[in-house]
Image (cartoon, rainbow, N blue to C red; front, top):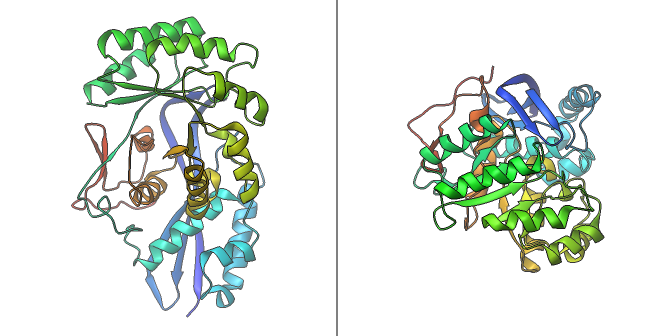
Length: 359
C-alpha cells in the first residue's frame, strides 16, 4: 500500500465581474488535489486548493510551481506517510503557512477515508435530511446591478442578505439600504454588511453610526486588519456588532489567536477554512472564540462546489444558530455539477443528484 497524489488545475469563470473593495475578478484558478491508495486506485479522495489574490498569505506567482513540487515530494515519501494522521503530514511538510493546501489535504484525506463519495462527514446535511440556512450575497457593482441582485434574492426567499459595501459612493450605499428597508423591515429581513476593510480609520465610527439607522445585524472588517487597538476601540463603540474576517488570516499560533480575540473583543468571527488553514485550525478558532463568549459563522471563499461541499458538511457538524455564508457556488459559469442545491435561503445536499467530472 502507498498513497499517491496528483493535481488537476481548473480555471473558474465568473458570470460577472466579482467586485470587492480590493478590486474585481473575472476568473478564479483552483487546484484539485487527488489522493488514492495504489492498491485501490479507483477510490479517489478530492480536495480543493484555492488561494485568493490579495487575501491568502501563500498566494503569488510561485504558488503553482510550489504546489506541483510538493505533490512530487508527497509521492516520493508516500510509504513514510501512509499511516500518519493528517496533522502529522502537515507538520512533516511544514504546511502551517499554506492554509489552502492544508484545507485541500484535509478534505482529500477525509474523502478517501470515506470511499471517495464526497461524503466527508456523517450528519443531517450530508444525509439530505436538513438544510443549512445561508445569507444571500449581494456583490458590489453600480446601483442598478446591486438593486437587481437584491430584488432577485428577496424573490428567492432569503431572510438574510449580506451586502458588500465600500465600492460605491457612501451616500449611494445608504440609499440602497434605505430602499431595502422600505420593502423589508428588520423583523422580516436580516442585513449583514461586509466592508472588506474599506473604511478609513478617521471616519469609520461616523459611517458605522450612519449605517446603524437601517438596523444592521453586523458588519465584517470595517477597517483594514493589523490595527488591533483601533479595531478594539471600534468594537467597543460601534452601534453595529463587528465581525472579524481578514483579521484572522495568517495567524497560526494558538496564543496569538487568543491574544487577538481578547484584545479586540469582536462580537463575531467569520471562519473561512481555506483561508485560516483547514478544519482543525477552524475548530481551534471556534473553541477560543466560544471560551471568550464570542459567536461565529462559517463562510466559503469562492471555492468551487468541491470546496463548498466540504465546508458545508463541516459546518453541519455544529449546532447552526444563524445563517452561514455558503452560497457562492452559483457564481461560476463552469462550476462542477454537484448535489448542492439552494431552496428558499437554505443549502441542501440532494443525494438523488450526482457529482460531475472535475474538468
